[in-house]
Image (cartoon, rainbow, N blue to C red; front, side, top):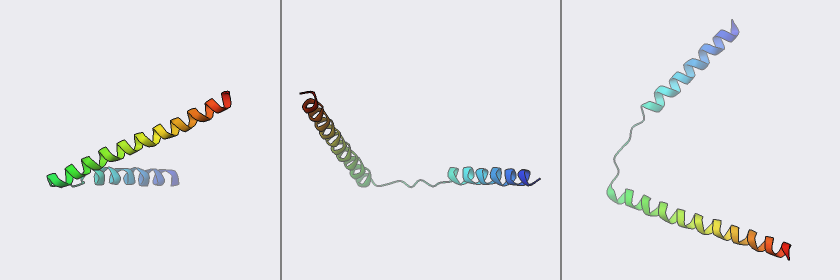
Length: 68
């Protein structure tokens, strides 16, 4: 009986989360805001690529030093 009550609460909680996630409001943003977000995203991607390139370069140098 206790397991059945726990199951009912779990299903109820999952249903409540599902309903709340569906009812989110989406407001329209100004074009200036969206362009700033896009520019920031581009900058972040470029920086991330640079960091990955540096890490790969360091790993390659370590590998070459170890091989020699």
